[in-house]
Image (tube, rainbow, N blue to C red; front, side):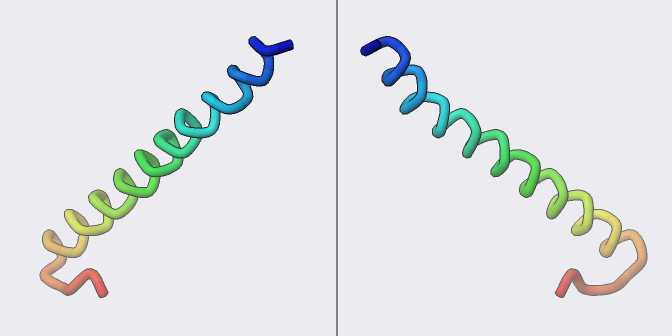
Length: 42
């Protein structure tokens, strides 16, 4: 049972890192597209 609890607790940092990576990739893509088109990101 301890192993299951440990796995449950440790999965959250991995999921958070994955979500952060997706968000950063999307922002980077938007930034590059805006620069190519000569406009601001915001």
